[in-house]
Length: 127
Image (cartoon, rainbow, N blue to C red):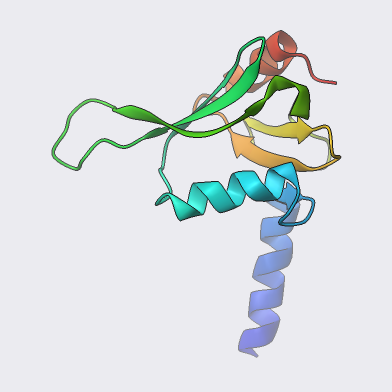
């Protein structure tokens, strides 16, 4: 019976949140995730696009620190990232956006303020 309950929970989670990643571990999205978990995952990430690079900064503040301390966690040439898709269809999670890579892979992230996902995608260029 526990297996059936787990399957129902997984189906509901999948319906609400969708897939978290598309592409294998060798894809850009896979490498993003491997880097994230290899570096002690941070609860807060900041994604930034420049003309040349895509940067991800992680909050590495210690428990006793009252302010955020961001350090570089991942980066890739700008040419490898096609853009950002905000609020993908078929997903109920508010503020979700997908970082889409040139190799066809993508990784799902969630904006801390859900209403910021669409303006971010529009500014970066959701291709």
